[in-house]
Image (cartoon, rainbow, N blue to C red; front, side):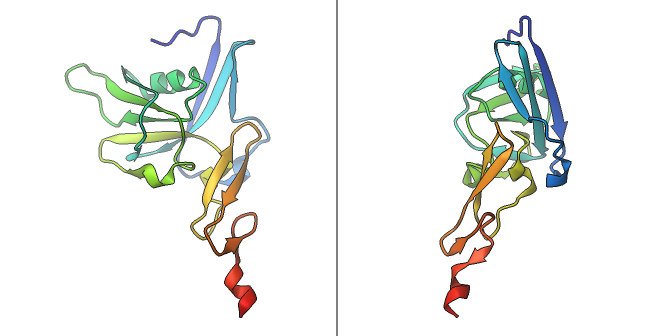
Amino acid sequence: MVGILNAIVFLSFSSTKVSGTEVDGSKILKRDRKDGVNYVNFVSHKFSFLDLPPLLSALVRTVGECGVTCVDNPSCFSFNCAAFLDNVHRKMSCQLLPSDKYNKSSKFSSSPTFHHYSIKSRCSSNPCMNNATCVADYDDYKYSCQCAPGYFGKDCEGDIKMFFL
């Protein structure tokens, strides 16, 4: 059970179509136990699943309840939530995850039964090129690209082979 005593939690869910131009300068993530205000902007990835050992698995009534549980857990950076209600309990499976699809992209895949929700980041617009891995910095709403061998540059746009032609 999630206790949100004297706290305000804001959740925002976006579609997977997020562009860098939507940034308004405000923070995407805030978890502050002192002032009791927590908020996160999540991006939904319909019928997708991040296959990681969960921090917590629970049955919830709504996606929002799963989101609030994630916001309330400082180690949670994304979650998987069942796409459909369980016929017996009329609830859905919720899995809180310690990482996101950007930092664990090899574990991200399509799923007929789950939706994945990640914290909106600069990585949401897929800025890294040439098979690079995008690493999100949620506190400052920035990113960095880990380039694949043979590539360089902020977005891994440079090809080392071009220098040797």
